[in-house]
Image 1 (cartoon, rainbow, N blue to C red):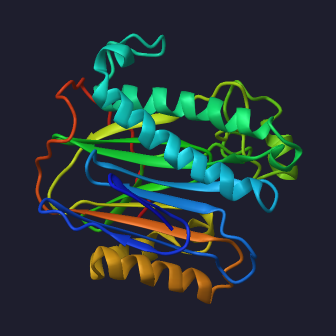
Image 2 (image 1 turned 120 degrees about the horizontal axis):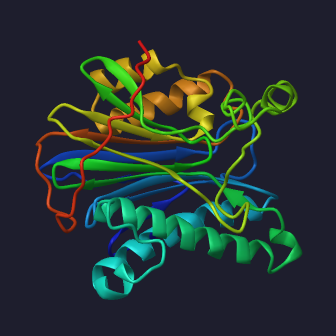
Length: 292
């Protein structure tokens, strides 16, 4: 586990950072079948940034990719806050988007370039990449971004809402611009269509919603989401503290075989107002589907 002054990046243990306005905890486990843990999570309350990343590639490439992805996102956040003028000059900056959405988008763009360059630097890193699911907790709202299939869930009033877009062949099979999708989905249902480091450019899914007292957010890798149902996630998150919920979710995934690395971050909102980033907001679009 690598510890920094501004937060914790981890793939081997735990990190809890209780704050007066929210409770957050992260935990990762290698599972029962894998020899290496290629998952990484990051908790940085200083800037309100929390994320999980699921690496892919060979023995060394996958864990390197997820760590580079996590470090890259945080570094971009820190640079943006320290040098606002340079950040606003980035070609990818969009005036009609919030500051947090812009930081996440630009951070993912730059991190994608960094991971791709690493993958091309040596044969042992060839083909490496990582999923990434991140949230930025800011004044009055939360900004979510994802690339790949690592989910972000909102648990609110006993219901679960997905705040992510799965970038897989199966999920994109029915898009009108993808006429070959159904055929490919039957053959490669879980294949990713986007990943950090996979292509020269990457387009993340980004959404923003207001936060309310009692809301909970769960970020995890597919070692968890592939074995634990959404209703089970709701029950566990509503029953336990963030720390206990992470342990219970991972224990349940391991009880069901632990076929992959398993990582969970649980964020519980205890108050409504936060002050991490500059107050530049735009009217959000609440793009939510309910799973009962």
